[in-house]
Figure 1 (tube, rainbow, N blue to C red):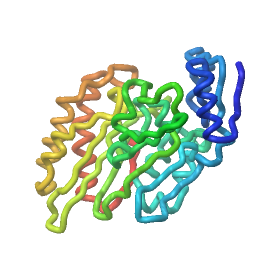
Figure 2 (figure 1 turned 30 degrees about the vertical axis):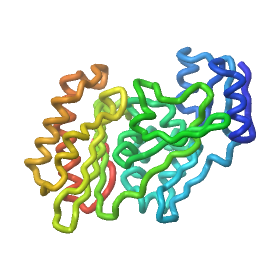
Figure 3 (figure 1 turned 120 degrees about the horizontal axis):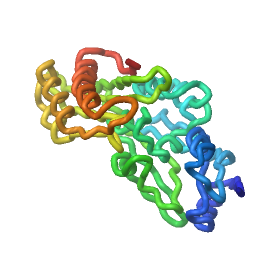
Figure 4 (figure 1 turned 180 degrees about the horizontal axis):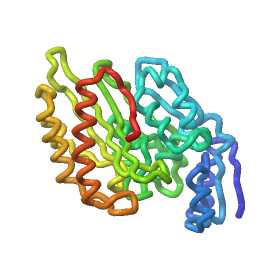
Length: 291
């Protein structure tokens, strides 16, 4: 196996053009190395991004969107004071990912590019309206995370493209957010079902925005915008949230695996969606919890 260590984004993109499907990109390596050790991936060439310091940054000190370089580690994000103030639920969620050593190595661009259905950050990022910046030789494009994630471990990247930045709109100052992570097996930390919720109200207490994304149960974070959009203009209460939870539980078509049967996940979705929405409408705190 040949390992390349390009010194710039431009050099990386050129290598991607030259090597095509023979190569795989490695950032922190927390997922790719496991796949290689288990024989699931055996690339002829690796393109290691460890020298691309230009993609390791956090720009969160202005009034505009928060911008994260693709090679920013989860630990760096979790520890950043400005991110903890602006995106407390995201940073709290990152603290629930795997362990300290993994968070130290794993990168936000690598996390999204892996497109793991049972990863925690994508659900929260979906409710925050995250967008993914993608570069190739001579061109760039930006996709909403909901379009970037395509299927189990699949995304919209072409073989010659690289994620360079993750952009997160700054949430409304009156919005409340949460992430509930239910883990069914003591031997691992991957969620059986995770639910991220976002709710905002106007000065009269009526809902202006509601977003919910379910992780760990479907190929990509599961959302029902037709249901959450109907909440606008209503007063948040237990009855409304029970209806939303029931709608999510009825509509989701979850995976059936060792973490839980499809029926169990449908039940959990109903309960956790309701509970997450009750949390954001009754609590003044934004955060994440492992259940």
